[in-house]
Amino acid sequence: MTQMTMETTAKMDKTERKAPEPINGVDTPTLFATINAVGGQPELAQFQFRAQSRWVDGTHSRSTMSGFSGAGGEHVHAAVFKADADHPAVLCGADNGPTPVEYVLHALAACLTAGIANIAAARGVRLRSVESSVEGDIDLRGILGLSDEVRNGFQAIRIRFSVEGDASPQKLREIVEQSRKRSAVFDILTNGVPVEVMVDA
Image (cartoon, rainbow, N blue to C red; front, side):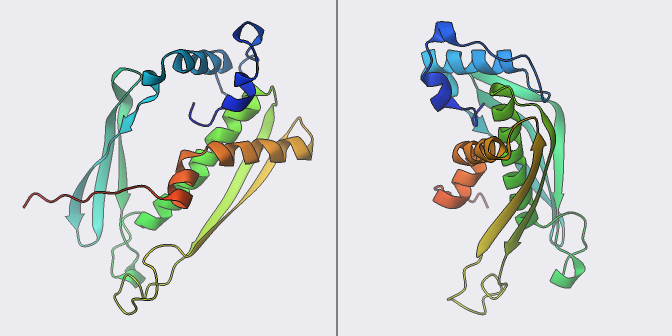
């Protein structure tokens, strides 16, 4: 929903909009109906996603995601999702899960991929394959406190997509670009977001 092609649909009169048949596993009629509903009631667009995290041992922690608010009410996922994070042995961990920064790479790839599927479906493009590889460069001297001139986080991130579908290469590239423009995670990574850290001790 957040990555739908709002500009394209906004240019059409509501009576002219006809959602394509569901393809790529995307329920396009519901997607278009959601866009129309939010367009008429902007307050429905306000969402809050949540995660709870608990330290397990060493550098190992486990987060759970179960509920969120949005569309005027509270919602729960179909299941309680859990995500373990740790550091590998070379970084003094026990390798019980991906590192936190690897989750950032996963989030970017997942967000852009979801957008590609939605936008392609809205444009009536049937996808055969969407694959990506994403990598981030980091200099540990920052987080280890060895240099105040090295940032703590990624210095650069690169993602490469391989997309196949029943459209021209140019149109497939346009779909990926539209996904980039509407990606929440891409926006978070490239524009930043205020983060408040509070402590109960």
